Length: 272
Image (tube, rainbow, N blue to C red; front, side):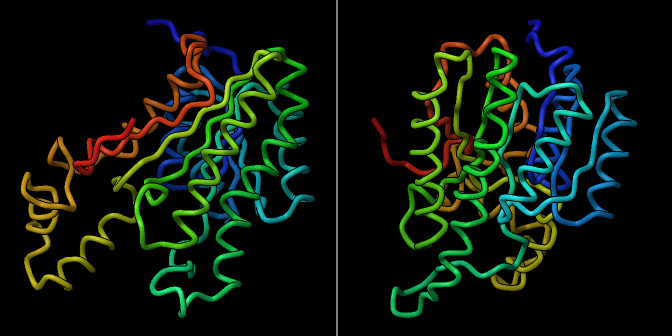
């Protein structure tokens, strides 16, 4: 299937690692020139070089922190200038690994952790969309894809769940506002996903359970495990990227303002 993406231009936040990097790679493989945004210059430039060498497309590294409106506005303007326009925005930026979030009993929640979580994920996505929309409307064709997470459906993480839920609302609001300009907006909820961080997380889980490392994933994703999913294995970042590329494509006009859950079928609840 021709996805109609060849020659399009995209900006992907959180593009130096994980799901963001995987999405940037698959977009480039479809003929899209991509600007990737992250905070860490060395890692960002290494990722851009790697993606460009794998795909033959232009991949522009842009250092920016999505908590700064000034930096976001500058990065989006630079992306549009260096790529020759902008058609696609993927909001995949997130807080640095290990950052605090508002978890645990409500009496232990630190207000600043909650606000920082929102500032990065929700307000960061809003900043990026606000900066990108003039370029998308100028093209008369646009896609915005927000990468959220299934904490929105699960109790426990007071900031992670709320900020992910807020991204769903932002998605619908933007879809309603922008549809008349030829722009669709959608949200993806990944669950547990294999990325560069996975080996470290599995090692910590093995230590917690006191079992061999190669047994952790098998145990957690077994059919009987409440931590698992319907496909009985971890979803790979590339599989999230395939979905994002379809939503970004010219074949996905019928999907806008929607949430797509991509967990491999985690959980047993039925949602309507």
